[in-house]
Length: 202
Ligand SMILES: Cc1cc2nc3c(=O)[nH]c(=O)nc-3n(C[C@H](O)[C@H](O)[C@H](O)COP(=O)(O)O)c2cc1C
Image (tube, rainbow, N blue to C red; front, side):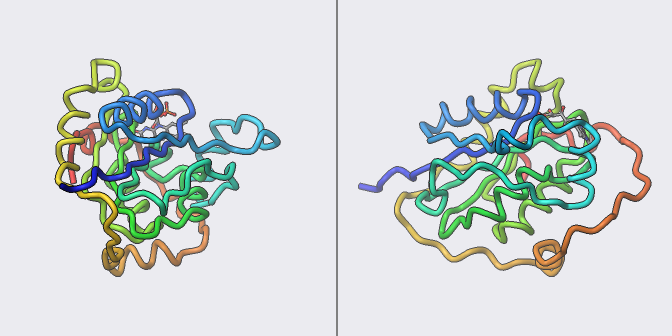
């Protein structure tokens, strides 16, 4: 008989959307939950600080995890999209917590666009190809995300527990992302909507 996979759902959330999805996903999977939070001394970062940190590829210092992600078979990492980029708290958590042999899946919430870029950045930082991804707009979260979550979770089925797997090989772009120091690449991007608003991609 196969062992069920040990599963951890990790997320950061500033205004609650990603937390809502993370909790629903965790309930569906019977997973442990880890919220990525900043140390109390950091206070509540302003919108501008969040935007700049993401754009400059900063990695925030985050509170130490209660769960060791490397002890799990599957780690799902959830994030908001900030300026088409990975938020600094999530980058900081991924950099500080090696995932060992765990497989990964990613999910995000957003106003309307940026998911593909954020998933590429996550893949670059943790060096693993996600088994599945889920991107939801705020409107989709408000309208009821359960069907999308069910489809996402269905894509994760078939994973057995207690199996160490080698990390997936990185593409050149991902290796560059992993190696890159924080740089200013703000560029002039206008907020295009919808093209990334899809669910259960990956
Ligand atoms: C600093 C900042 C930058 C954002 N940039 C984007 C963006 O580039 N694209 C987008 O679709 N939404 C953007 N948003 C909207 C959030 O991604 C969206 O509200 C998300 O659901 C927030 O998740 P949370 O409630 O878990 O914090 C941004 C929000 C913030 C605070």
